Length: 196
Image (cartoon, rainbow, N blue to C red):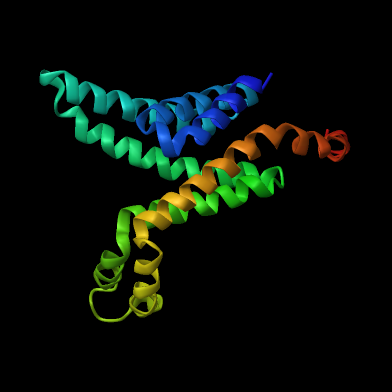
């Protein structure tokens, strides 16, 4: 019953580093389908936000009279990316699926690096703290790590590598999700019998 949503999520996340906006459509459809199949409306809502974001960007880009929707679509799609990471983490935690939990962490760090960049983390930390203190030592850590990060290829290369690894783990995690959940089924059945 849950095969289509899981399959779409697996394909979508595996294609994320290469397919760009196309993968956002596939993963959003996957969340919508998976949420519907499992009766979890909050996961369906994640998918709906992603599809609305893509639709807003496409409408604003290609229909002159709807150009105002492009910005709104972009905000919705960014929200979708953040909610997608949270949803992956939640599913991984519920099913004790290590691959999904690791994927959520890697994707979160990857997108943080991609958005912030090594040079602007210091500015972001100063802005967040009101330029009064070094919030949590982020500026200090950034300055210390800057040379090593640049030798590796910069934050862009690290972000790409983490996104690729996170996408592979997410794909594997979604494919193995059913087996891990079914392993918990006897206990869940016992608890549900005791509850009713």
